[in-house]
Image (cartoon, rainbow, N blue to C red; front, side, top):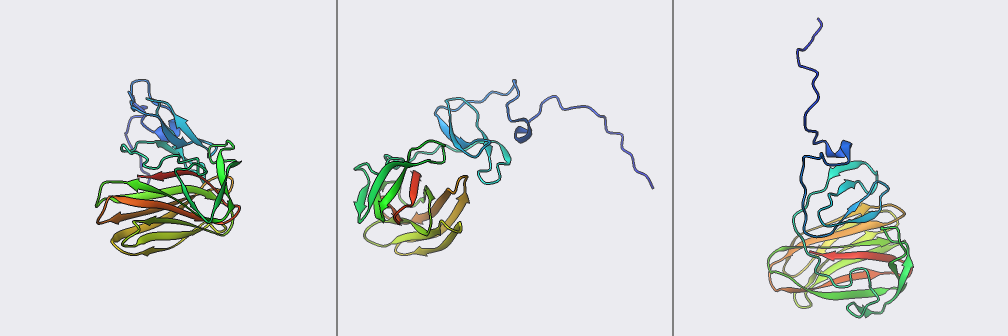
Length: 221
């Protein structure tokens, strides 16, 4: 039995296949009040200007993902790409600035010249989910940790050699913790830790690295 259909072979008057088109139809209006980042077609982190649409790509496979739309967010970390700055407290660690090529393709990533801990205090609204992330590269494990100095912390060790996120360790008033790792280009990974703290409004955003590991683009939101 043969089948046929009577659907007209008419092209749509408005194409919203953003992944395939890679651009907006001239009749579509897009606005955004700030600059924002996205992953371009060769896997580098790029910045889009105010009111510029972002056509995002998978950072590992480079497959087109279409128009990137996100809710408004604010990075609570200061000097998020300058870990040698005094805003970051060092404990048993030393940081070399602009020591490696970062995920945006420029030599602006910092490296642990001596392994140890760096951290920064962050204020936030209580009883909300907090996500702390950073791009990291190197061998061995790298720790992302959120601590309030009084009731405990939540952390995950990320294996930068294998690209695997370890188990999340939770203590104190933290709940709902998850961790994930995203493979980028050129050996970089984005290490992500999310949890909800049920009391207080201040935490320490903590990173623990070993000598030779590179870091870039910390974000807490």
